[in-house]
Image (cartoon, rainbow, N blue to C red; front, top):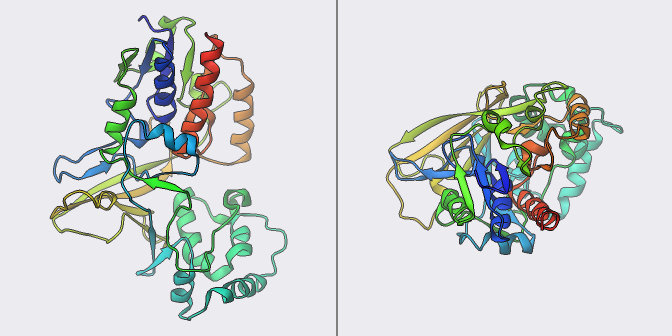
Length: 374
């Protein structure tokens, strides 16, 4: 291997660093244990329906960071998709985040925008909670008990497999309540889906003469042979140190793929299911992400099930508990076992990061590495 720098993982963090270093004249080897590039943001064409699917669940690119937006547009155009989410509670659909339509429909009333603050404040005051001790109490101090029990409680139980009274109030620091009928899920200036899909986006980012990509390769199978080559590691940080202090907890996701030979199954990209009696958290219907493409007479869905990750599972979400915070501090203070190791991305930092934030951080570390290894 003639590489000057090794990148472990081809998600947005690893791919951005690889692209920047290659553009700066460095020879880069990218190691990916999966059979494809792109990490959890990868998309591909479903062979049965011809519909572009997000292999690991819905990914909508959104940002207000002009530098990040300018950078990613070097490799793709975006369509005009604007994300909206609906949630089903007791067999009835509601708009999410909670807005004027959600409140009026749920309470069977017809409040005006200026009446919402006082209405919500009255619901909150009924519980007399002044110092929230857990997620449930925190949510109630933000939206009141009825809205909490309808739209937050059951979904939270499925998402974390814990009663909300056992979870930290820090997990739900805010719940947006809109006083109008705006049902856009994100408020960022820029938003969309890559016109040709995420798979093609990653291909273009890694299409450089200074980049070598190795798929189906586990870094830990070849780690000893790499020596002290500067490395960017985007895998789980506890795995890098061979779980010296213990395993960090992760949530993972299982998907149940279904094809229906009808033009439209649910009328939106994502439908949440708030009742804890329904085992899945949401259903993704991917054709809605590309309204600019020719429509088909069939549709493909993913039902999403959340559970605790085993060691052999793909980790998705870090678990914000004091135990994990303490473990992360220990791993973060551990000197790397080899020189010049940089940790990044959701797994490497054990942080929930949106795609735009991941790219922003990758651009920063790329600049640092280029300067240090000039």
